[in-house]
Image 1 (cartoon, rainbow over the protein chains, first blue to last red):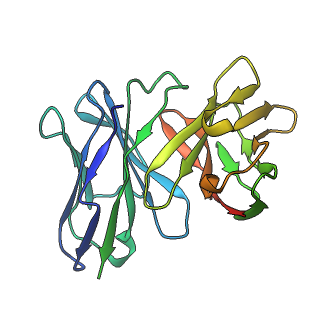
Image 2: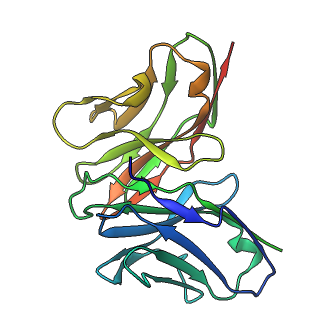
Length: 116
Length: 111
């Protein structure tokens, strides 16, 4: 069964450093998402991406964050200058459609980011 | 704005007992509702979803949920818990193209 994959599974970085989290969505999916889950808190939406542009972003997704689909398979989340509060589990998700409300989003296993 | 509330951050049941995980939603439009499960060190897996039509929705692993508009609820149930059901369960509502999650309920199953 196709699945969303994410690399790395864990990343430790120093405050102020740039990190890039990578995701390979399911191959025929067109809509891509990033969510995060700070330890002990709820899963929060960060950004959605379609047709090579951001379709929606949350207030968390400020200028320190960017997303890119550099080729036909990868979808990346870059944090330009990490802060301690960026420590969280980051989930990538993809779906075939988005505007059809019942469309299922398929999640990857997550990348646990720790900022020291 | 749409939101979901999950009552009970932890639920403990004995193996073979009924599982009931509560979710209430707030939505000004007919909601699309989802239950996801997260096993330790894994991602979120869809259990079931409600879109339109039948209000009792059956999902994987013997779980089901009933959409009750009058109660704005979408509680998740399973008649008989299994040890392998131990996990964190998230209720979510779809808002445009994003999911809005509840805070999650951790289910423990005792032998």
